[in-house]
Length: 167
Length: 322
Image 1 (cartoon, rainbow over the protein chains, first blue to last red):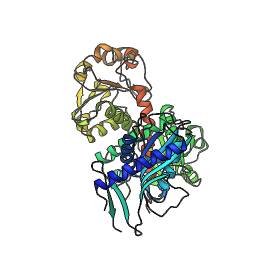
Image 2 (spheres, helix red, strand yellow; image 1 turned 135 degrees about the horizontal axis):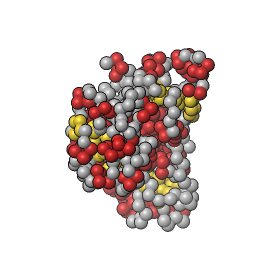
Image 3 (tube, rainbow over the protein chains, first blue to last red; image 1 turned 90 degrees about the horizontal axis):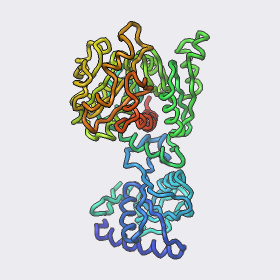
Image 4 (cartoon, rainbow over the protein chains, first blue to last red; image 1 turned 60 degrees about the vertical axis):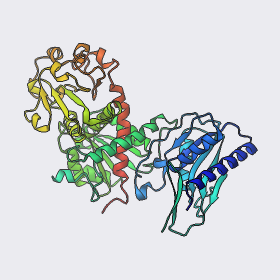
């Protein structure tokens, strides 16, 4: 489906929407945190486009997932790395796809184990219907309607591409 | 063979952690990789992840221990498990209850894991053979047989400092005979592909079967340390010595104590490790124990992350098994 040029266009739009959103909210120095793995790629692209000074944070939600008792320990990714104090700062949480909302729930829990941010905004590349929790994105580049069982996945890091995996 | 199989479930995943023997390089590497992720938990303002919330872990210690018990307890608590510490020497065995009866009673309290330390080799295996299917057992040291979590935290410390195992020389110095730590370390180093594993000590403290374990035996400290990347000092296990195997602690130090001069035989960037507790002036000079090449306190910190990894892996098997 979307090839690499499309993703770059989506990222441009996402960066400009996010900038508008932050300006309207009166936030001029946000901390950006990407969720491993796709969310980190998107966050890196946004971080570059917005020219943020504070280094990018990364979250691995492996240890905060709600399906541990059902499917066990997940294959691991790199550790979380938040190279800043979160307290009283505005945080932009970034992921590639927002679907059930469970990943974002886990990420919020982990964030709050690092401190008490002033606010958290959610920016995602793709939303698809199917929320199981009261979570919605503040900024999203595009929406996708997929058949049940289909999955959308961001592949990368170079080039970034959105791939739909059939049911 | 049967004892090796008992550690893995029907899908080859770690169910119990009793000995390094028989485990694959993939499983040991997986433990080290998970531990790497868990190290960050100790740096969070809230030093806890919710992984084992609602699970109950019992530290069943038949032998005294401070460091091991404390790090197991902290590891379990940082995974949000509930932890009970049972010091058995002061408990029901004094009233004549059998080990199996005690196990049945503890299981009836719906615990999910036993961490066992015992003076008899094979104690953790025995318990693992008798627990309910959903219960995991971790060996926290059984006699002079094995201390696999200590070996893994040592491997973790070595990997952090030296990276690639397959180009290393490692010397283990001291009382190899009585050391469960040394036995587990030797197995782990071999499995991880360390080409040169040496044991250094007096003849009375090196088991005769040592060469069959895939190690090179040295009786001279300077020769044994020549060019090594890692020096592991062991504690003299006087409590396990039934005979007079040593002339005196002073004489032992003269021959096998690690001093800055002796350490100079190793590579300049060699690290010095010790499982603790240190007998200062017996195995090691304070100048070395507290010196720039010592990573002894790091080992303690790493022990928490490594034990978290093993607990999460054994209790986090998808769907469990019948």
